[in-house]
Image (cartoon, rainbow, N blue to C red; front, side):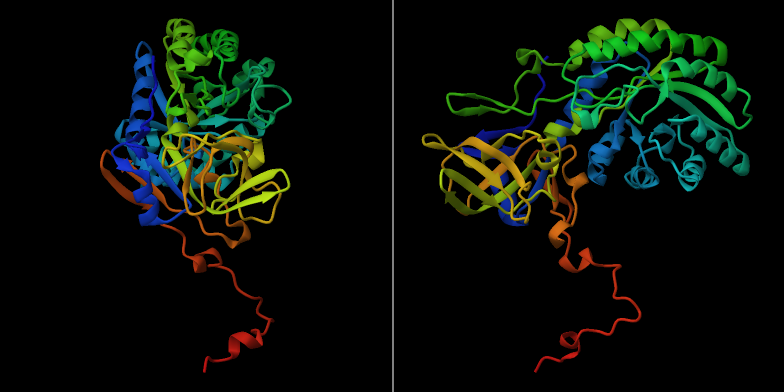
Length: 445
């Protein structure tokens, strides 16, 4: 199965679907996020198709990209949502999503968040500890409701992914140890304000092989069958974590804008489903999946302008107007993002560090990367920036959040405008005992 995204060169210019990206950069300025709606829809549809033999519900992981236009796209497709905060729940509802198709995850749910979720009528809480289970019961009792819950089982399966995004071993803060789950359900069944609705697991993110998924499902599926028989649970959530390709292939200097993951020995939805569906179908349960990065990662790019070309000794730097506050993944995870100019370049290449303007040595997007020779004022695109890009942004160095553009064929709309500078410190003030600086009291002549 060949997965596509809809960024490609046409007549030497990078396009998002039917629009030239450079036009968007000039109209809205940079840094700038650009998303392809067709890619969002395509990835959702392909995953839904391979899971069709199951009674399935795709619950998009909102934390990957919570822009309202992205959420609306998935809501219109019938998606459910995996949320981890009250804010994400309210975002989903604001975007037209159905709270009855939301699962609420996270290890630190507050009483206020639990109460809000119960009032909104969510599908289930993914419970991370026995203390949380007791808290949900108390809040539900106060509200005179029965709370739908699914215990998150930790199968103690090492997903062999980055240490900061693995979640399925006993060294992680997530879930209940496998051996403790059945006794916990026995105790939970005695709590009058809980409804035991399912069981959930999630072993980590950016998994590029099917084996860890298969191992975890093989371990947890018999437990799910036992719980269905004893307590009538109706669903088994196998979590998310399907990885994406961050590196494009280059053939004769021309980018091939999507590599078939199978060609690189990586996980695809087809291989994922071929191994898991036969294990899940005999259970007769609704199967939930909670993908985030897979649906949105390659649907977005970050566009940035080259401010300076600098050489220091043997090092060459492209100093751009985007920074680690706009896309933190390279600084935080040492993550790779493909970087290419908006205008296709053939010929001379050189090794560059692409760096931002923030006063941190960690403010970089790549080091010693072979890139085409480019000049000040030209634009670069950082690919695979649709997941954990804008959503992890900050105002570090008092830099405003960049705008986000959604493209559909030949239409573009600004779905998040650039943050005005004064909004950065909105809500802040000097302490009541602090006099205004003399400079602020002077009137201009």
